Image: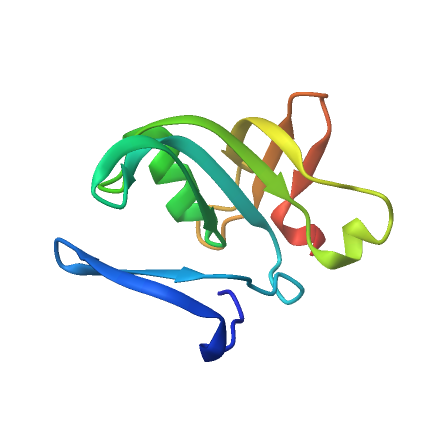
Length: 125
């Protein structure tokens, strides 16, 4: 979940059954992990390069593996670590894999592998 102020709303439009909202800023400080998903999709009424911020791991994993209505194809996903890790010097990194830790199916713990070989886990937040 992202925190925003209503006066930061820049616009909205309808895409199928979904309202798309444009915000001039969002607050990521309370999010555990956030993901910047880049790909090809609808940008307004035209097809082109677009990006989405997502705070739900299951949604990001599904977008990567199956695509979504908003993104026809995913080009790259970046992980933005939670505030506690950013304060320790960790920063946004390109992902190469999202995997579920074995034995955690009932209460999933995800591992985020970056292109530099770093591994973040969803229980680090």
